[in-house]
Length: 339
Image (cartoon, rainbow, N blue to C red; front, side, top):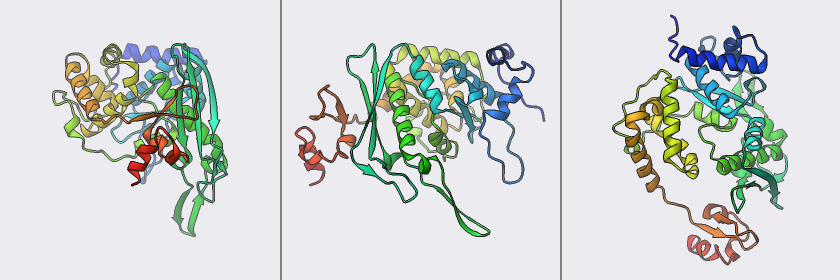
């Protein structure tokens, strides 16, 4: 059965031609090469993996083109998801590129906990947390993001085979410190520059296999979504322009969360929801997003007495600090929470 090529031929052709010219690949073969190399596609139980569609390829090309990333060097790749869409994944080299290419980028530094921890017997000793500090030219205070080992660590895969149990160790076991630093960098870049809708590999693997969660109370009722949407590049472009004009940068991170949950609950993918929300339906979409955002209780932040730059940390971070009980700022809240 022939696939339905649901993208506008001229636009898709232009993206493929641009990729071929930029990276010196045969124009006639670039599409098939990309399908074969940039999608992490596990084999099916009863045979080969399902073929990557033209729509999935086009969706990846749009993201790669938007951020100027090279799919051939794995700066960006993708997992097909269960709704026949994609989960775009940016490798650490890709995050470094989009961070350093951003015109507001003004420097980065890492800070490390003095307390060492071991996530499990397979892991290397690692700081309990790693903090990334990103400076922007257009901000008076740096963006500070701290990631904790116990929240990020992925244990070795364990399974049962014909010869008994087995264990497959991965990079979190061999390079524990480096991978926690990568996590801090990625979250810092997201928050500092408002990148949404793209993931690291840990997140993408979970999302690609995730069960659909019913969140219908948050759904835009006026939006008619389709279970297997065709890709309308003009509608996606219209949605991106509308959302950029309507929302401030600080809303972009949670916008990605809202879109992903809304799409899943409506039985479509992220691109399908964006296309349905574009144009005349955008007002309804924006109203639903603002209502959902208002229901999210903002987390209280506290000044850190150990810092001289006026940095404030959310309560969830303060609660894990070894000095929480004695902290003049967070201490009273700590006492209240712990009786």
